[in-house]
Length: 560
Ligand SMILES: *Cc1c(COP(=O)(O)O)cnc(C)c1O
Image (cartoon, rainbow, N blue to C red):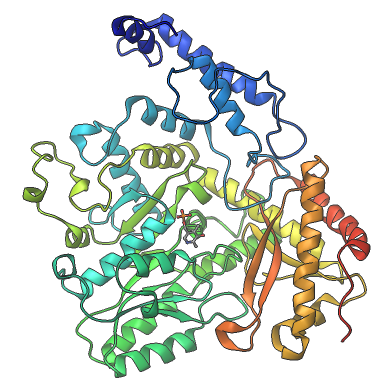
């Protein structure tokens, strides 16, 4: 670029922004650019559940290394953005069964655009106008859904499910310390309790909060991937007898791998009765990690008798079972819920909810400590949030979907993905050499192991789980399944099958405690409303074909 007067450059740069006052011509340019982007991306779509590569003329203007001296045009950067969409999984694709990542509704996308254009910061209503109302309303509507009193509950959108766990633990710690932890820090050992299959972000929370990972108490799970209540009771009795302080018990409502659901009502009952029995002067805070499972609450008042939505009996059984295990979510003192998982909103949309909004004052700073903020307005969440700047996109995306879908829409979406997963489990269960692992946990996720064709999967799995003498075979089967998984991925990338995922350790063998060998699994996680029976048949077909291929590609088992 010729050296120009900065004023000329500035005139050009102004065309890079949406116009601040009404200007239909510049708005048309904005829309044209967006529509161009969509066209380019469209050309990347194929039968494979992934955006393909495109042949593109090499642009000499796109710099390789080094911070660029001159800029580029809006058109060039639009094309550049398209390049970064390559290799991206299309979550809505019927052949994408990868993880708990949803396709995004149009209004939730518009919410993100609205937040991007007008750039609200919900640290404070003075910087976010009515966007703050979206947060307040989403908190109230979700409170109503799960049974908190919306007039007294509180909450905020934070930086992920991990953030909700951090808030839940911090609140429990401050309750235990009478709010002194904010000033004095944590000067003693205090315990945080979760199950072994609880999400690993529990480790982040205890490490970052200064509790220390050695104070994280991990309770073993039963075959249903739920926290074992006798083990929890044993631990709590021992802890209370010795005067250990238990700040938080964190049940998981829907584990990441197997959709295991801890028995929240039983945990609350147990905790209450032990607090009485030991005459404690505090109560452990119960934070339910419902980042995945919260959405099942839309079925609390579904008419299961008449089944107006026409779900398959297997689906009804599954939904009822999940509801029974979750119990009443309002029994938890606080909850974490991800709308970017089972809420069909874009990242990041994570709600931290507390039964009693007064609890949030335990996390407050005083306004004198923040002199540049809060001189006016009447919504000041920045007083108690860990974040300083906070996007409104999470709150608005969640609210948009709550209003868009209602309970009926969410029942349809969640009911459908559970129904498809049930159909898949039904198909897989028919094969002698395939073992469905989460046969007692019912959600949109199916974990399964495939064994060489001559093996009885049920028997092999029993031995893997319980017999230390079988650990070599267990290791071989892990590797064999990994090899199968790679073969399946290959097919899927060629547009010939379904994209699945993989977990290295869906659980550990039941011997040697926490150092028992890991048991890995193939994983199908269905989230798309476009996943249909044809896609389910494809998984079965592709697994059987790959099994035949694996016989000569995936090694021979060690002799017994
Ligand atoms: C995904 C997940 C988390 C972490 O949530 P992010 O939104 O990814 O930070 C926590 N707990 C469970 C059970 C999860 O599945």
